[in-house]
Image 1: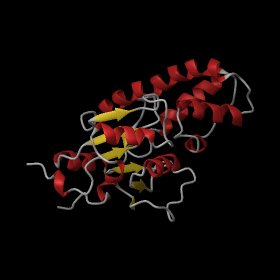
Image 2: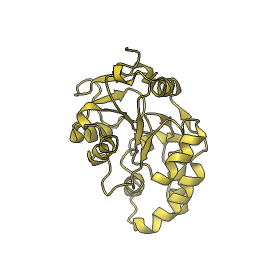
Image 3: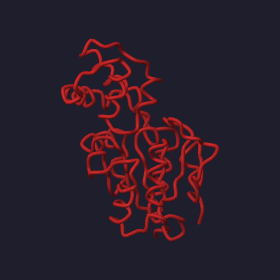
Length: 223
């Protein structure tokens, strides 16, 4: 018998890269292969981390701007997407505690969704590769709607799909982009200390929780 009624949130919405999956090395490699295609120098993964979160076009734009390039991004993006697909399953891994937390939530009948700025066509293959493809009732990518995070519209759309009020649901993310999206949607947010926070103040914010491990999500062991 489901005990979803005992869980404080009727829906949990997760960010993907940096929250569930450590994919920075693969994203960095795809970006660096693209830079090499245009005879530009590779950049350190630590630098790429500061660019992840706002969608692939913005990622590439920041890298080429940092390299001093004025190449039209419309010429660059097709090649980048080829590399992105080729590197997608190169070395991703789930962060510690992710598999167990998702299993607990699913076992309690709590619906879960993904809200990511990653291109939607690349999300399900990644989830399936990591063995969590059946955990989510809805997956929303960065190109699924006209808006993407940090707009709150994707979160409002997801909540509406499940017939839930945004203010009753929980968003779980790692970045300032996630945090701003949740605030814009009026959705409570839990933040993780790992991932790619990019300027997010983990000490002073309006999050309902800041955790080191998803097994510490509020109310996960309650009931």
